[in-house]
Length: 274
Image 1 (cartoon, rainbow, N blue to C red):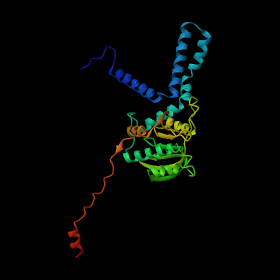
Image 2 (cartoon, rainbow, N blue to C red):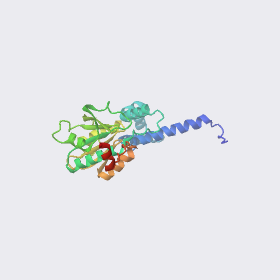
Image 3 (cartoon, rainbow, N blue to C red):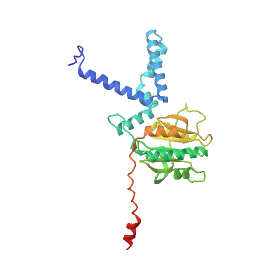
């Protein structure tokens, strides 16, 4: 049996491990986002506060002390999007162990990939949202309910320029096209690249609040991008897109096909007629 050092209780070990796990999950949540940059800036202020106290810089110490005394309110204001997303994640999965997305057929992924590549080749803009564990109905505005099977032809028809719902996003959930013509929340991040258009900003806005995967086809450049967790991966080809989607979505078994009927010999058919 492992003996703990004097004065260290088993509860203390559990407490330390829980805090370390929470901190680890928080860093995973904000990794690569603007929140991490804000956190680094706040850490710099804490270091400046300690330095001002050690070297008796009274004016600087007073200013930093007044700022850091309301640190909880500052954190809530600065990290409101991240806090909301973390609470939603915990609400869906209280153990915080990483709930997997629902199964999706490999044929569905293939149809989406073919449609996106065809639209990119024609330089037709598109926004395809793939629902994972977060239900997206509370995050989209307007939209036309379709509840149709995913097919390359239908996805291309939705985004054709003369389609009345081509400006919005298509929501795919449970292997079916749930809604089309949906408007997504735009990101408010100031550090977004200037060459990213409205579709990319809408994709960033949705993925900052949910775990959805968004495929964006640029109308100007005819390129394909995948947006996940507030990060954009650009200039994908069809093979790369298929590989990414298969990694993000577990593929369920294909539906069983009915066994083919064996053709009867001519003699048997003749006997049946007689």
